[in-house]
Length: 392
Ligand SMILES: Nc1ncnc2c1ncn2[C@@H]1O[C@H](COP(=O)(O)OP(=O)(O)OP(=O)(O)O)[C@@H](O)[C@H]1O
Ligand SMILES: [Mg+2]
Image 1 (cartoon, rainbow, N blue to C red):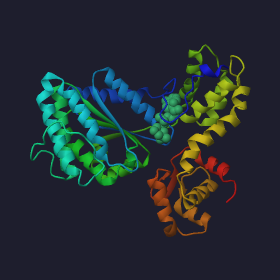
Image 2 (cartoon, rainbow, N blue to C red):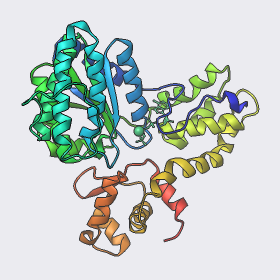
Image 3 (tube, protein in one colour):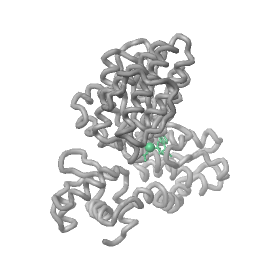
Image 4 (cartoon, rainbow, N blue to C red):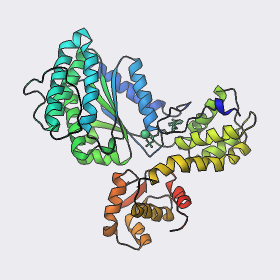
């Protein structure tokens, strides 16, 4: 069928034509936001899940949901090598400038900008990646200790007061939160804790790989009570079917029920795979309805496309030793696997392999669902490894 009209959208962060199965979590976040707006307690929400399950698109959709009802938002993505204060400072500046345009919030927001000047000015010595213009002079003693935890707390409190004065909520959306180093994560948690105690309308809506939950707990033991963790996983069978069917219907095209069965079963309901399979099945089909045969014929092109994009980018960032470790895991199956079993497969001992495993965790390739277990963060990665490295 006409590829120009193909509705499917495989790609990192590409909004899907139908955001299936996420109504509940959007509603949870909506309720939290509205509670904050009227001065009630609400936890910050963190979404955790494997690669390609749709965390980024969900975060972006939630941001739109919030903006539509007049809330203020900022968005950042934590890369592996930039500090959290460097990412936060310019975004908070923008938010404060916007809040300063609201008459009732002007003075408080300006004080927030002074806090920001103190914050960034002092912390530049520690985090030399902070780059930001100053609009107002720093106020001595306000967010300028040079200690991230206390300064971020003072700064977010000011931001919260400005948001309250403007009768709104400031939501800080952070993607890839698992890359934020522990001490910076601790500072963020502590600052949010203070805002929650003062019922200030500031919250984080974050997303990250499954290891984020453990990282938060390590950073601050009370994190579990301050945040609501929501697991984002593969779609249920009806949701996965809807993710394929609705976009086709939107274009006036039918897709046969057994074609849906086949794609849902081959993709295990993982959103990225659904988009890729849907796209190739559409391109294969000559006319409506898209048949099971079309879906079957799309297999090879789909897997080739996934290998070249979704999987390949992960593998390219690894050293030979790291690849070898993942290949040994793949040999054992989808996982999770005992670290001891992986070591046996490699003919080494667990201690020797600990640094390699540590690097793979830091790069977000694997995580530890429970002590001594290792699992892939990319769904179906075991099958890919066997394709990419047929022999060891
Ligand atoms: N609920 C959904 N229904 C249908 N398709 C979806 C859904 N969520 C995400 N997708 C599709 O899945 C793909 C991956 O989405 P996204 O980039 O948000 O995943 P992610 O969890 O952020 O992955 P990563 O951890 O690699 O950043 C995109 O092509 C997107 O269109
Ligand atoms: Mg993402």
